[in-house]
Amino acid sequence: MSQFDDETRLTPLGDGAFEGLVSPDWSIGSNPNGGYLLALAANAIAAQTPEHPDPLSITVHYLRPGLGSQPCRIHAQVLRSGRQLSTCRATLMQDDSARIEVMAAFGNLGVGTQPVIEPPAPSIPPPDQCVPRSGDQQGINLPIMDRLEIRLHPDEVHTKVGGRAQITGWIRFKDGRDPDPIAALLFADAFPPSVFGQIGAVGWVPTVELTVHLRRRPAPGWILGQFRTGDLADGRMIEDGMLWDSTGRLIAQARQLALVRQPG
Amino acid sequence: MSQFDDETRLTPLGDGAFEGLVSPDWSIGSNPNGGYLLALAANAIAAQTPEHPDPLSITVHYLRPGLGSQPCRIHAQVLRSGRQLSTCRATLMQDDSARIEVMAAFGNLGVGTQPVIEPPAPSIPPPDQCVPRSGDQQGINLPIMDRLEIRLHPDEVHTKVGGRAQITGWIRFKDGRDPDPIAALLFADAFPPSVFGQIGAVGWVPTVELTVHLRRRPAPGWILGQFRTGDLADGRMIEDGMLWDSTGRLIAQARQLALVRQPG
Image (cartoon, rainbow over all chains, first blue to last red; front, side, top):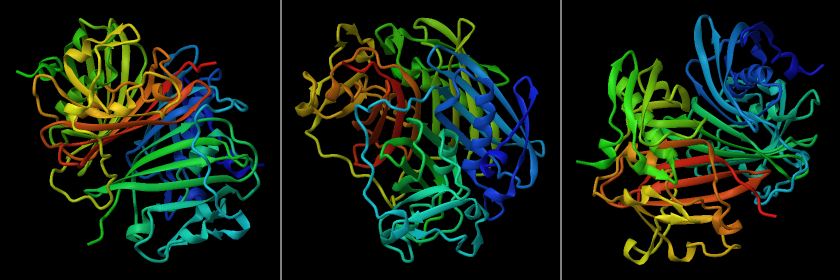
């Protein structure tokens, strides 16, 4: 019924091993999106820790690009299981090579808890007054844009260099599937690189490492995301992101280290 | 000559295995500081990747408290080595149990590169006008304060509840050792929890996971650190930190997920 559920489904092989297929439909160009690969690995971990099904903190290192349309094998391992959380790791392999390595703490996300301190959601125009993200970026085809709807703040649609290194917008599944913690892993890596606004489009910005902290289960509806690059030096940038649900509650924080070819 | 070097020294046993001693002198109460344990593991990884000696991104999960005055064994493994970086992991064991699990990307940090985008250092009084961090916190002895000098912003020394969840201050080794990337891992976890300023001292705030991004090699002298908790909900908080060197250059960003008992 849901494309995302269908295309992140795994077959357990026992002993923490799982088999699946990496769909070509969540790709940027010919590379499967990093958040999509992370969601596959997170599903394998969740199946190993039924008492702690939610990623509270999950870190992924990207060793090699994934291979769309090809099978994958995931090995997930619980390193330690305590009362509040389980520490786990997973490796996603394709064609006999590790593609991603994941380390995570899984636990139980709440729904209704009142936060003590919470970063407020930014105020932006509603989705129908924002600009749809195109399925094409610098001539690169984005198959993932047939799966996701992304609407960007009209003031931040980057057509020229010299703005802010910030991108704000709405995101949801095209087929109407509601967001959940695993979907938030995908959403944390699905916006255009925020650095484009300041230094211009610089081509491929490969992620070295991405860490996502899930904060609560999202309410149904659009997710609002804001991403900023406040630190770019020596060909490496750090981008921070936050996701809020349709009730204005923070559901996730994300940070990634990416490589970037500096202009000039 | 340097206490930190002496007390993070490892003996290689071959095949990525190392042996060392966890000093009791970098502890908070009876628990070895998390940044100190991370520095031990980082030294093991660095020894396995001589062409990529610096942690560009390093994530640690704390499974069990370390044991001061007891030997440790570290297993470090290079998962993939490329031109720009090596992806690695390490496990620090004591008493036959894994204490910390580390995943990292190691590479080469620059010194003189001009940043394209850089978070500016906050302006605070010089070290001699700041308040020394005491060797005692809520009645808990802090042996680590015999190894480190920490001077806190006088406006942020938290004697009462209701301020900002922010802490800013200076840090250096007491014995005069200059800072370097491995020391920055320690410094990223050596300030008092910033959340104390807003909700008051809440006792033990155990770190679940800490990620540090090293940005450049530090210049000699004091390091300036600023830490903020902008997100506390459901008994878990996310604290963000930055470290700048004596020339005002950003040398590291850090983020940790910690457990906290909420008041009320």
